[in-house]
Image 1 (cartoon, one colour):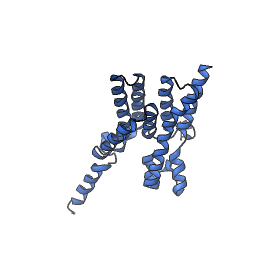
Image 2 (tube, one colour):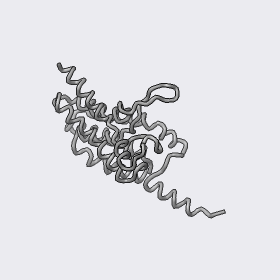
Image 3 (cartoon, rainbow, N blue to C red):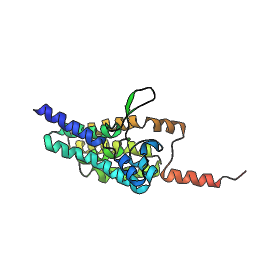
Image 4 (cartoon, rainbow, N blue to C red):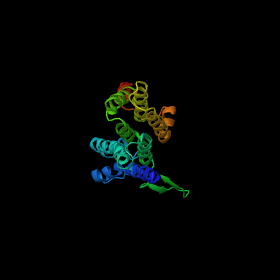
Length: 226
C-alpha cells in the first residue's frame, strides 16, 4: 500500500510539472506558439519574449505554483515523509523540463520532450520544502540577474541558492540533511536543460540582460560611425 502511495504522489507531481503554462499563457495572449519563439522553451523568460512582460510574469508565477503543489500532493498521501517531499518536488522540475504533454517527433523519427529550464518550479519546490525560502532565493537571484547579466546563470542560481539555504538549515539543526539533496539534484537538472545556453556563454554569444545588457548597448551607441 505504501509503494502505491509513493508512485501515485510522484506521478501526480510529474503531471503537475508537465502542465505547459507558458504555452497556454502565450496562446491566450497573442495566439503564438511559444515553442516557435527564440529558445523554444515554455518558461517565463521565453513567454516574455513571445508575449510581453505580463505573460512572462504570469507564466513564472504559475510555474512556481507547480513546485509548491508538490507539497500539497505529498500531503495527500504521506505527509510525514521527508524523502517523498524532496523527490516529489524534483519530479515537478522534471515534468516542467520534459513535459509529457509536449512530446514531439524530430526529423529522424525519434520522440523527445519539450519544456522549460526549471528555474521557477525549482523555486516553488524550495518553497514547498521551506515556505520562507523565497525570501532569500528571490533577492539573491535578482542580484545575479542584474549583476552577472545572463538569464541562464540566474536560473542556475535559483537551484544553487536553494541548496545553500538547506545546507545552512541542516548545519544549525533546523532541517534534515535530506533537503540538501533537493538543491544538488535540481542544479544538475537545470544545468542539463541549459546546455545550449552554457555553450553560448562559452562562445560569448549568450544574450545579456540587466546591467550587462545596458552597458553593452551603451558601448555600442558610443562607437564612432565609419
